[in-house]
Image (tube, rainbow, N blue to C red; front, side, top):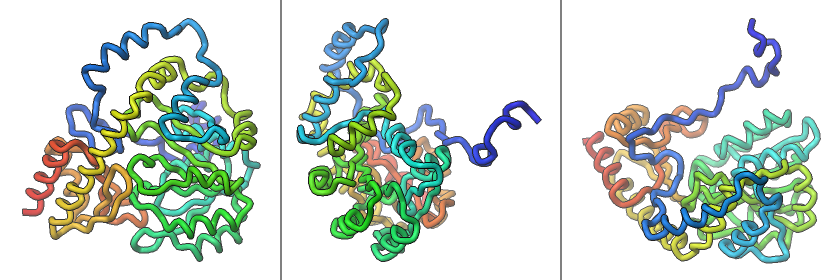
Length: 353
């Protein structure tokens, strides 16, 4: 047996690394990225802005200018605290590190896989509560699980990934009110949703909101943020590793995220394309299409694996969820630009002809 196999925790040896499929020379509709590259007229300005980056120095430790840029972009009130992370994943892990060993993380299923994975990494218990058959929140089951497992953290993706829908607001409020746990509303897809819990932070001291810039055009920056009361953020900041937001991310984001009208215009295009794409999928009689408040659409397809492979063979990569529990025969497609969406639809139609 090798050194690493003797040395490594047995529970880590038993799991697989997070898999990212190769996507070279493909239309990439698998990871909820924005299809919009930086406009030509901004590229020169951006490169000139980068020239002032002092890469021989450590980054600004608190990313102060970036913090303010994000507040202005997302209309975050001054009375709330903001904690930045190297993607939302780092912030989820930071929250887990704040817990005692063997505390419990509670979430719904199916949902974002990192809640469960990070629970394993940090030796916390994980409890998933099944959504209803049509992927709605089962309030009675959630309240029962809260009472039984006494979770320290409750994660609710809003909208939910991979299903795309939001849940009943009153049900979520009842969950927040029912527990001493910290409740995290993960609003990664806030730009495409009709509702947000951001302003509810003022009402509920145990509520925090997670957001990211990955879904609004800047996945490559790896930048997430946690929003909560100033007291909550100040305590959680003790767990943040120093200089966690690198200089190039800070400088890039300070420039790019000030283009608020461009970001909002791109989001509006995605909303329109989502409607067109959803309608086109619905018109393919073999498919069952789920409503979405995100920049992706979940649909159930006969011969899902074969359809996934056919799309891939024809240069389009989507997400195959068909073998996952509670997602049998389901596929997820990111909303691309019009040309990408039309090519995707034509291939799906051809498959079922």
